[in-house]
Length: 391
Image 1: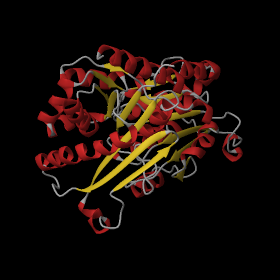
Image 2: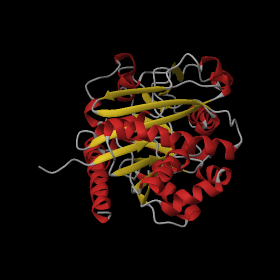
Image 3: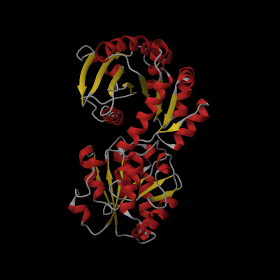
Image 4: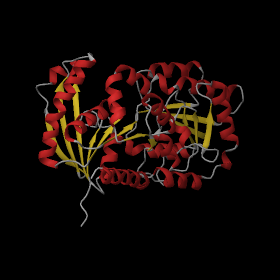
């Protein structure tokens, strides 16, 4: 019987009891890989000053098996604060001790997979250098250039020594190539197709007689919700297309600003803020609408677009990076970034030509390119090829 691959994943962040959605994609991907390989996760977190009061109350080390993933959580205090050189030394000091725990319970991995150059990739580099284990890095971070400027020497080491570099979108792939001067392939995010049901929806939205748009995000400047609201106002009051309703899912620091804009633009009858919605209930809201809108200034991937498409919805998005990877004339509409008029015109085109979009084609497009099975098999092939090269 062929021996299973042993993969150690080192994420830059990972879900815990207090923050169950933090780094949720890394957890989902590890659990998907664990159906085919032996997988462990090394989650090393340096706690901030704000958390110092709880430092002596929390478990510094926790080991559990979560859906076949050997999960090692380590908590240490960041007494380096914002001094990069001290923080990096802390990571180096702690990661070797953490790895000894991993070896004792999980064994020596064949491959290390770091998620995000800094610091998942950095920890992978340190362990690879000491133990001669090949490592891969997947880049997800929107502000890659900013990260590299903050830690230039560290990132240079990670770039130059990784056996393989991956990025979750074509846009991010080009950034990695430019900054690291290294080969980089695209490995997209995926979604669990089976968790999305087209039979599950909210009747009060689905049957309201409106063209229902949905926007899902954590409210922040980069999501550019004010631009979207101004576009909606122009669509309704200038172009006289009023049989439309925008449903906004999410919350964040600028919520009061969003509420004020909605009121000032007389959009109270055309826009509903639903607040945060649990992941397992989100598909009900998306499935109740006609189309999803992404208005971001920058997205590394924009997984919510794929989640809408697996339910058959066309997606309208700004040209903000990730969505350009999966939006084609057959699956949605792309508009110029941070352009109110372009978004308004795109919404008008979407509503006018909605009948041209084939929901079954859109679903099949996602299944063929972004399913768990498709992406996991690509990763496993990459791991096996790398292992064979190094033995």
